[in-house]
Amino acid sequence: MLNIADILNRYLSHINMPSVSIIDVIEIILISFFVYQFMVWIKYTRAYTVLKGLLIIGAFLLIAYIFKMNTILWIVSNLAGALITAIVVIFQPELRKVVEQLGQKKIMSAILPFDPGKEIQERFTDRTVNELIRACYDMGEAKTGALIVIEQEIRLDEYIRTGITVDAILSSQLLINIFEHNTPLHDGAVIMRGNRVVSATCYLPLSDNMELSKQLGTRHRAGVGISEVTDSVTIIVSEETGQVSVAQDGRLQRNVASAQLREILEKAQNKKIVDNNKLRQLLMGRVKHEGKNNK
Image 1 (cartoon, rainbow, N blue to C red):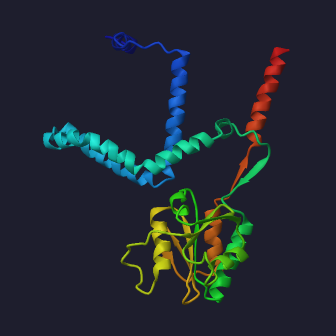
Image 2: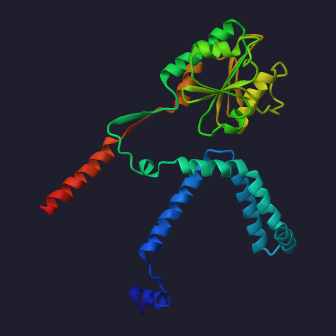
Image 3: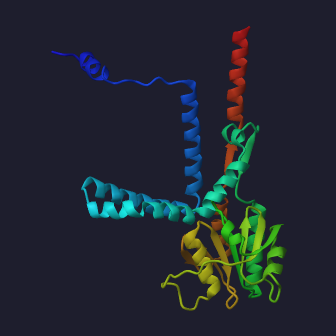
């Protein structure tokens, strides 16, 4: 009776293992790095939704190939060139953006954070939260309409480009002055990135949701519309009632109290405490250990 070792030797003897050189290892590391960066990038863009749709189509074509659905395969093979061109056109803004981000990325600092101490990572500060709440309810009392979009993971560059660049530190006075009646920047949306007002008078997509109340105007539909296609948090101040509403994930919360708004904004902060000392101590300990061995 053959033992397990003999069986393994019989099957493994027919397998030719390729020789792996240092260049092959470097190639694998580089390919893995770029694939990882691509997946991280695409996860936080609208292209991620399109990619999931393409994967579903790919699964359908795989089924068609397995079951030999020749008509479907013939159609796809004749349209393959046009489909590739269409994908490049559809993803043109995203592809340009990823190349720009790749040029700006500090690779080593992303891999090895050497900054000592504990670092608080957050999208915006507590001061920004307080200024936002103060501005929204001050405008609500004066019945000044406002539409404020807070950028999250998905970047809003295509909507920022439709407005006028402001690039100023956010304050309640700034927001109130922007949305004041008859001022040049009051019409449209303000987009926030971090602690700054990036752009004003921005155009947003309107929601087609038929379940929204007919009493809601363009401002509320735009707030819900941008929340349907991105992960942004949008604050809407009604010009008619002075009520503050929040649109997120395609849903609209109306007549939000200041405590509720603070809770939503603190969640959007995504505050994290990162301890960079651990990696630094690990590397320092390794260096000291190697120094002792050399002695």
